[in-house]
Length: 174
Image (cartoon, rainbow, N blue to C red; front, side, top):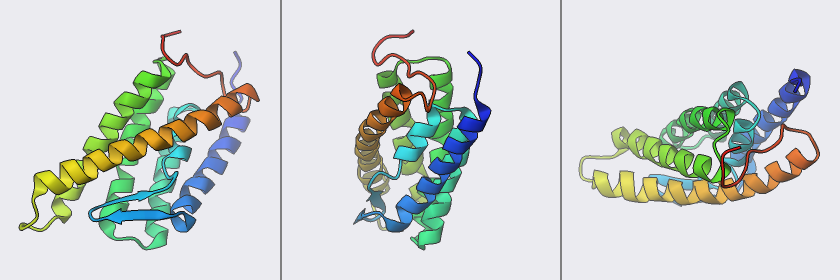
């Protein structure tokens, strides 16, 4: 199958725009050090199904969006870790892992990366295990699952319209 790099670049550019604007205008739930910005991972997850470069650039755009919003640096640092789960997810998609396994593994990577990155921002009197791993890690995992479900719906429509390559199987390996 011939690759359409122009199409991929255009879709990636649109996703970068969304990844920047969503943190700026979207609703945010705060439970410091955890916060959840509704649908902020959706462009990144969609980009994972286009290419590894698309995933990395969209994840970087997301971190930039949080920086532009002027949120605390702990949130910008958490957003910067999105390049880790985006790269891992794009690799899994490239290797034709099933969609459910890709979602589960990227959720674990995402939650762990965000939990670890908040540790330097916590004060010594805060319970690091509680705030980093339970509040941030579990909160991130739940947020990732919700955004993954939203992204899967969008991905299915984009795949059906041939705007992106064919989706991998949901449960089995192709």
